Image 1 (spheres, rainbow, N blue to C red):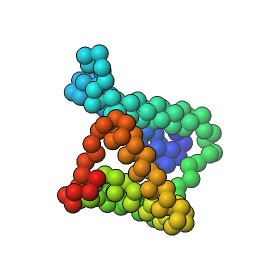
Image 2 (tube, rainbow, N blue to C red; image 1 turned 135 degrees about the vertical axis):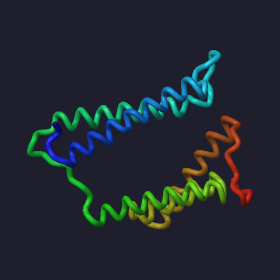
Image 3 (cartoon, rainbow, N blue to C red; image 1 turned 120 degrees about the vertical axis):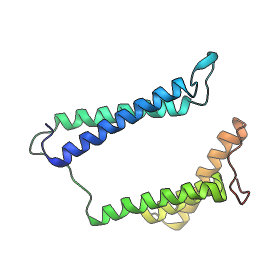
Length: 157
């Protein structure tokens, strides 16, 4: 239907993300009370995340259908696959870091390390960007919205 095995695989992954997005939307509306009682609830972010996931997956499916039969998907080479694996490992470390060292410190470290090791930016740029991302998150959630971010076991924000 989509030509190559890689294109068929991409289509199946897109269908899976459509189902996951639909589940997020459904769960946000029924269990997390996203828009109940005339105000927004804790399910708003997961709801819109599900909507974005569905739209991006539909766009991918439409792109796959419009592709010619001789066009194939380029899979990452060995170096690209290593970068993908590193990003997955870094993300897993960040989730563990949230529990141990807290949200803001983990976010600054994750951003800095990702930019340096995966995106190959300079250390100075990576550190400044990591601190800037943490500062913006702090300003939005803590200073403006008054939401306390989770602290880790070490008591850091």
